[in-house]
Length: 342
Image (cartoon, rainbow, N blue to C red):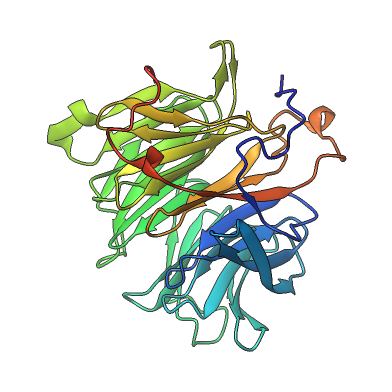
């Protein structure tokens, strides 16, 4: 069962004003301004806010509509544009200065993930049509510079140049070196038995963390000689009898620690080297659908939205869709052991 808490902001974090009217699917901080964040939603809109930590407030900066629900988003390297991928198979580029939007990519099925690769000036998109495509956004839509066919639908992807990790529906993870993206240099199988929900690259690019629908996380090393560093652990469970999906894993890049967020409405910070939970936060009354750190890990943003993991019977139309931003202190740093078990 879901938490019975009626407090929508139990951790007393910054709540973004004018939130989406439907489920929040993606969050991403600007690579240039640590206090700017965008959110894509099933209400077919992408929104941008400015966060003010001292006053614990936010200011809506921009909003633009799409023709379909948005599943993923990323920023251009200079922070002037925002890319989105939608259920209509279209990727778009939103110019924040002019508030103009143009289509830059097309798939035959929803686009689940997109990342801007600043080093090669291309956009990479991953779709349920089983393809991974690279686009020169200056060229006409419909002509990717590279298109790769994978074995199954792409459920999750993360990029930390030059590492690209792609997780598919058949529990495979394709690892690419973006300096030579034509084929994966490594293909591994998930350590988890059930469907992949999210993936996140280690800050040192030596491996990745994988989350599943079964309340479990895999820490997987890419070095075959260091497989002792690979392990799995349980999280987002109730008394080890009810398992909830791990909807997001996000690394705090300066510290090497990471956060998990799940369908149980909870989120926690972890140290993978010490195999230790640094802090567990109070649960929200509904699922956390997505989350992210900003670049210097001074903010951790998370969205409270029903993720449909328990079916339509658990949907409560009276529950608002909310986005919260936590001002992160020492709680995300290694050595901050506030609990005694994983």
